[in-house]
Amino acid sequence: AAPLSPTVHHFLQVTMGVPVIQGYGMTENFAAAVIQPFGFTRVGSIGAPIPCTEVKLQDTDDYKSSDTYPTTAQEFSQSPTFKGTFNPLLAGKVVPRGEVLLRGRNVFVGYFKMKRETQQAM
Image 1: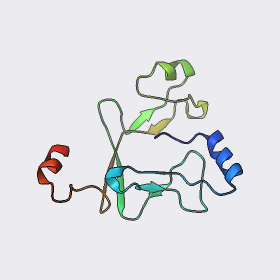
Image 2: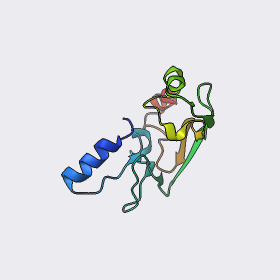
Image 3: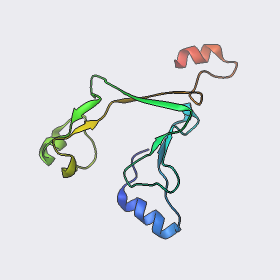
């Protein structure tokens, strides 16, 4: 999956005639961890954590939870960690980044009656 572009977001709203709500999730957390509240959608946002989920950005070797956005399109294109399209409105600003960590009752704790497979997956 990837972020929904503003063009596609607008196209879906116009052609379907319904609000388009974005979110973030994966199989391991029952498909939803973060979602936009109905009626409070904003293009480029995935919303807030659902009530049973905690979200944290963790530093990694490639990403720091507070990283500075490249100042030029050339610097952006040469960056090994920034992807997508350069946004001049973010140039030089500190942006939140990092590995997304999830915790909550909806997060995978193991395969049902498959202890060995669970240990291998963890």
